[in-house]
Image (cartoon, rainbow, N blue to C red; front, side):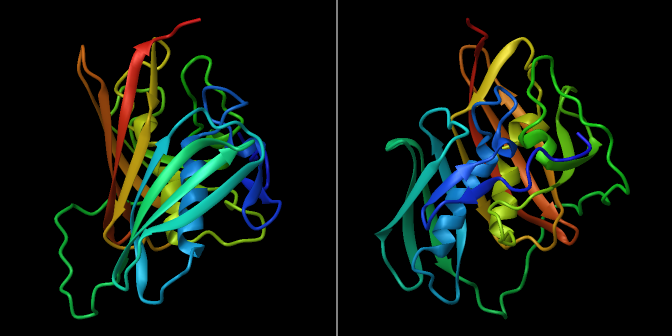
Length: 266
């Protein structure tokens, strides 16, 4: 994992079509994508859709309808609820005209400058000077998304039994020739909450999220984001992954994932 497997997550084919590179591949298979790049591609589309000065994307929820193949994809966006201060956007991701993911995003007006900031979370630990070699559970595919991200754990690991906390950043841009926006950087990482906070044994259990919700009360600053994650699971139930997101100046948002927990099946 000394070099990323590709120079970008997606190569643009035209305005709404993208070629997926090997860097998008998730830990379960080299043929299917991790939810991080998928979420970020939809978030990018929200930011570019009929932009309104003085507003920001405050919440994104991505529903994963099917495994997303490492293949050409098409993105569509429409406004569901228009408004000057609050609007709701809906996006879909298609592979060969079959929807594989759907997302909604709330675009809201930015708060006035005089609003007093509130901070209820402790400051994140300092960014470690160097990272440790990242290992994963037996059978995990390491040469896609996991190696396209740089990880610096301060607590736990992918192979440990969480909770976990790590600083992370993409080693490649989301789209060739573009600088990632703060929202894109947060979304690329957000779907990793269940892995960073892994309290279930991935070698023995199938643990897959059906969705990811990312709510940001402000945009992150800088390349590095600190994720503090944990997983809650119950027999005869399912599981939830929760994470807080912070930059060096403090917490800026939260992540929630609904998880399927099952036995591995042929």
